[in-house]
View 1 (cartoon, rainbow, N blue to C red):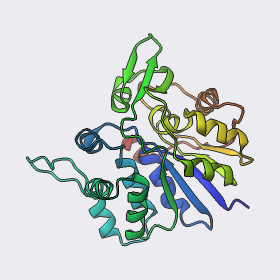
View 2: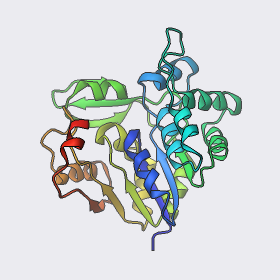
View 3: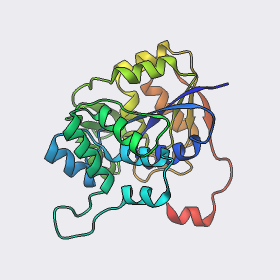
View 4: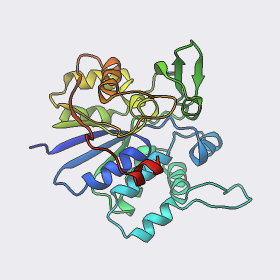
Length: 263
């Protein structure tokens, strides 16, 4: 039986996965990418010189055991003409904690305790200037996670401007894991930012835990148009070293009209 599960990802996908996974009798360590530079997160990164905290806030909220009104407050975005416009309450709280503690890991631990989170949430790195880069099929280099998403292109290579210093606790969690999960979500900006790190690949190679991929049910416009499930797995394996994806969970039914309209 899988007791220690490490889930890697970012964005909305991993937060929804963890909302359901937390009800299973497993010990979860969620590893979150921190290279986002859009919306509220991007503004806070620029002003306070911190790693991206928006995806971390989503994950903590979805792992929380507290009442829904508090979760809604954490996700609430201000709509105003002042500098608060667009900022999520939870992002501001995490930024304040980071300013107080000087450590993203410590800030996450404090907020997790406050919101009754019974699992572990870790950033892939505490580097404040982490910048995601993409080399598209025409040889153009796109700088920044938001810019990569907005470019609507397929990429030959995803890499960091500077190799991040991976949090030691992330490596330890991978080494102790019984199962490693790549969450559904954007391949280029949610999953790959975690697995392109050299130290993470080396930890995968040494781990005895199988790697499971939860496949997206739709393609992402401009990035994975025409991709099959196999193409998603092939892309992931391209960035992995010796260790490859061993298990895939994929939808084999037609999605409903309601769900199609959301996408």
